[in-house]
Length: 390
Image 1 (cartoon, rainbow, N blue to C red):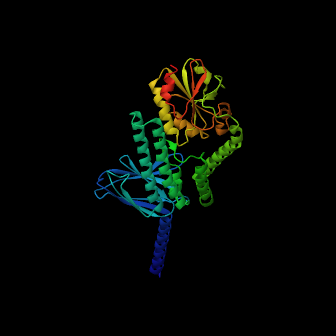
Image 2 (spheres, one colour):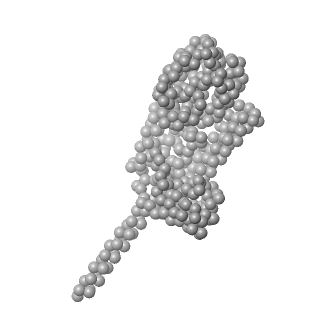
């Protein structure tokens, strides 16, 4: 009788443990696979949130290179990295799926296969296209510096490369708005600049679509709140710009300023110290109005830097940014060697009307006497025009 009761209790305990184990597995996702020729190499699993990337697990690979990570799933999609010897593979996890990755050590980041996650497979395509775009930027920059192509050719080719990337990315996004790969593609950057411009009327529609999907399907995700706030801020700035269109149309589109007088500018730099344009009197000044979040910004800053570096010490750059996102502006400004200030009013700034700015970027030259003497056109060579004032 006692033996029978003990047996029943044992069976009950085993069943309970088994049930708990099964439930745990149902609430986990698995990332496994193998890396060839990576014996004794450390493989890290990292989690990418909005604010940081942290290591959450690691394993030393054996001769076979096999690995397996099991982690608790979240209620919304999240992004992860496999990192090996400085190379990374981007992954998206949105369920209790098992993602299998097979790669080789020498080409870990580019030549790998993925099974079990359609989103992660699409992300691979996005990353490879992004790498191609970044290389195009680098190659074109070298050609321009070596005078193999003109300024106009350089700008045209950069825009063509960006448009080619965006066409592929749009196809991926439009194929499935609900895929984490769509979100991933939307926020990719090259040289710290967003490829999709939230202040472009075509691009903002994509931001709106993804924001709507995440708001309805993943309301608890921190990315949802961030995406909604980001998109609404961009829409607000676009509406302000549209409301001012009629006023701007009344202003003559002059190629050269008719008066040497200008409105002084006094705006804060990244250290929140106000710097005025008039304080630079005595130097030739390149007065540049721009926005770092735009597609053209990397190419434009390269052109500005060419003139600045050539006449360093004799010329100053006073660059006014209309970026609405202060963090994006700071991340870019910290890498630039000239004066960078920001107008927090963004596209609602009165500087747009005062300086007859009908498009960005807009560049003016100020002589040593503090007089505006030239509006730079797309056909002008900035370095040549600066040299005339020295």
